[in-house]
Length: 108
View 1 (cartoon, rainbow, N blue to C red):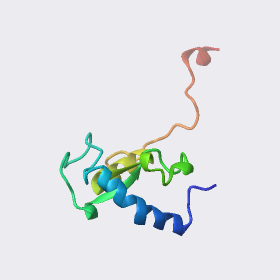
View 2 (view 1 turned 135 degrees about the vertical axis):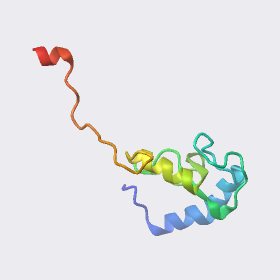
View 3 (view 1 turned 180 degrees about the vertical axis):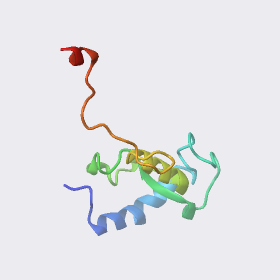
View 4 (view 1 turned 90 degrees about the horizontal axis):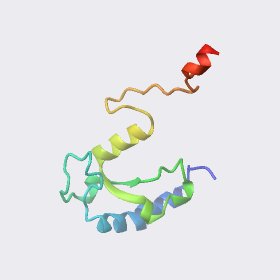
């Protein structure tokens, strides 16, 4: 199954699960380690629902409430950029696709 889910699944997520997650999390951003507004109660419009384990890693957790958390938009953007391999400045990090040779391999 692809992580790209049918439209009706997304509608279910936002119609039924989103309010539950926001209430459970007290309308507060759960990423206190990066949040500009830690511990502050925010309106629903300022919060997004984040997948703790990304959808691309485990699609079966897409609507699992224990895998969802309320986060403010700036924190969600930062977390997503880091998960996708971008630095916080928005520049793509270089990803090494081949392993580095060890000193022993270089001298062999």
